[in-house]
Length: 425
Image (cartoon, rainbow, N blue to C red; front, side):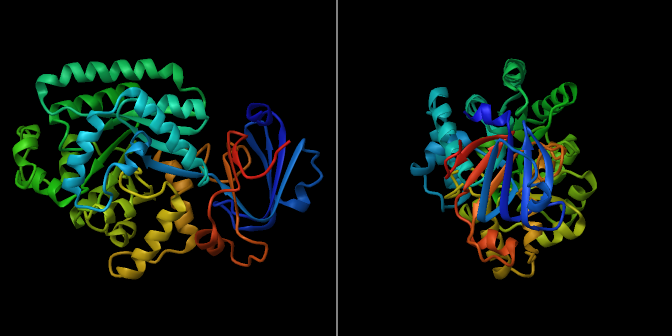
């Protein structure tokens, strides 16, 4: 049914429409033809179109589907097996034990479960960090849009060639699965879990295949201790990974030394950064995925968001995975960020609601390199759309969305309704 609907004409009407790239439209509508947005505007201007399906939400807000630029859908099943609020080092040890026992079939089922949850929050696209590659198949089966970053870990140069061959084979094997909704990319896990030699080889592969790259970076104080001074809790186990790396570099400066900081690179977390790091991030024009709830739960510090935005660093919001947060809702992430701004006004800015919304739509899409196709409601873009019911008496749609919305009334990807609380015929 969804595929048939995707080929038809649908007119969506709501009390408010938030295009992201234009001012809000009261009593707005979006005309969808096939997989694309054919028109955006006032309902009165679009109502003459004889669409085969008309959906009206007089108590709703219509907006582009959320883009969640950093998830771990394969970790969904760990939500009940790990304590989310504990120091990062203890959490990481537990995660290592959990992922080592996970089969491909388990990861696939876990990713499917995560997708069913995430679409209920109006998410239409993810930047998925995949250890086993199972989430690629799950995303394809559930018809969600995404960029799948295949995790790569190499703790010893003696293993580099074998692991690089496996990575390249996975990329080649994944290409037939991609289609119009999915792209694959590279995910070297972190600067302390990939040797300098192997990291540079991954960069060469990314350049050769024209692939995007994502890595966790500057996430915890222990990471900075290890990389900069070879000290701290991880030095005996992971110190050997960095024995050919220079001393005295912060994680960000070390990644810059490796050549990682390119325009197609997405860094995740970046809580442990100083002014020099921020200047580099701005100059290199890399994207940073900010995960405030995960950072707080794992006690790794608060990102200096004010300094980063003032310096011109490109920042979007992400939820991370259910092993470290209690929901996959971008709106919950925004709400927590707003709370942080109230608690830490000197380092965390109080942003206008439309800017927060942009950070989980168009900015997040840009971080994944797909903002030409999704992230805003514009003619010609893909019909990735979400609708939230917030009540009929709405004067300020942004405030109503951020503080009054629950689960999405409708989630549409590529012109097909994949989740809805209403009967569609």
